[in-house]
Length: 375
Image (cartoon, rainbow, N blue to C red; front, side, top):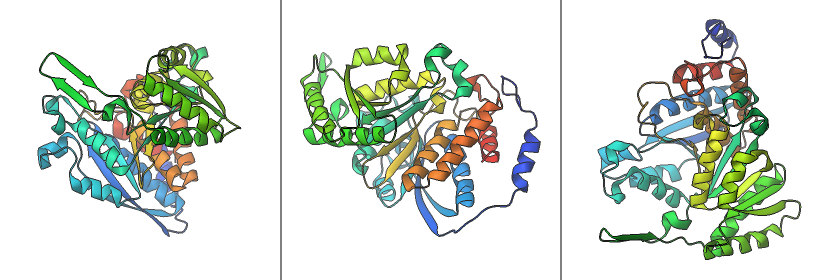
């Protein structure tokens, strides 16, 4: 057990119990090829824990995993002279899934845009055709009191942000006129809106059958098209309730009454902002996973950044990465594997174990070990 500060008691006994159990390798016939991108900052530390868990799930569920490591972001700039080398793209395309850590840091902030780590991330999303970013935000009952919002507001929150990932203002034509003027173009095509809308409605059918589309249709023509197309697609899903919200109201409602949301459908820039807001509702950005899908291969990553201020200290929370591994398993059809991960995390949290972001003192590896022991 552990107290509220995460002080470990009985940890040795837990690990001995785990090690005493025989492995349950069932068939060993399924094999998955994983492209691993550790990235910058805390990326290598959290990815290491994700691989640890994935290996154990493979033993329990009877599948094998092959790993190939690739460079992306600042580390790729340092070693290859570019943020997204062609061998990384090719390696990912030849894999079943991509496990990704985080990129970026102040070391590379002064570089030209084409050499910035973030440019590499945008490029690989585009090259892999990853147009849909799924970001669940679930409040663990054990962490209700860690949210900055009142417990009665956040209890039971379970929402999914479906963010369009390869269009909108991030990919619009940029212009810089000297040092006096600059602008970026927000654009969406009908086809881009249709495909992300279908992902949202199909996701809602597996959940509570409600989609809230968030836009700025009272001001932006691109949002007016967005709303029009979403309403057309909604007709193909009569069992799903659709409502619309302007993004400013949506941001307010996420804080006022987050339980009203099931699936939030929105564009690239709005989704970027709203999903980070949603992350704080659950208590820590270190708890939220994500999946980027739509192309030949899915990419799975925690939503937090590279956290250069704590890189190398071994105190990052690995739960978001481990939950991302769970989303990867679900993507592969290994549903039981994802359930094992969620159950293990909940057991660990229920016993009071915490990393520093949640007021505890467990380091990254210790948290990974405890989740491993509870699988």
